[in-house]
Image: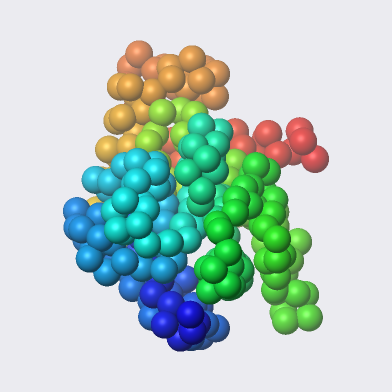
Length: 286
């Protein structure tokens, strides 16, 4: 099979990330790339179009990603299809079951679009050679590129700050895991917005008092949303954590700063407190 004929699907709730991967693939690989925007039709689209490679998150709006992975060969009419999971959701059960189902790899965000492209190249070589799909699973949160053909990261010679990027990747994974542990589901838009806001405050604490004027607009611009929708999504995510989350962990994190019985803190208070908590934690680990 000619590489030019490869049909690649991208299914990710983060439109910015999906488009970045699409652009990277177009620049580096001769293939047709489709970004799935309507997840309600995702399964029907796969059944109809029968892609060769699917890059997907296991957490998609209205889609049980794990069930889809397990039944992909049936949905695609028995056609071979390489599935590459790229997700901020780090869960041992999901990783194990994805491996058993035969995905090419489970890679933990944050990850560079260029790295995803290199992973696709490895997957497509195996697909075009007619070989059976093999599992290259990533069990280390920061060491996500454990595959047969190594993923090449940008070098310092290209002007890329490798050390800073690596540290930031580890930090983002730490934030993601903490939000998950607190009971904020990864499929909520507010989950991703909170992660962005916390990272911004950790990098520059001065912006913590400028949620409305600076943080909401910047996140909105990245995700192509309105600042008001970003604020609402974060508020909804915190409501979920305070009504259905793990109160023991929340109490442990906030201690005497917030009385959980009196209701959740404001968006600004939560982001600032989590940033302080993680900064303190990072200093202790240094």
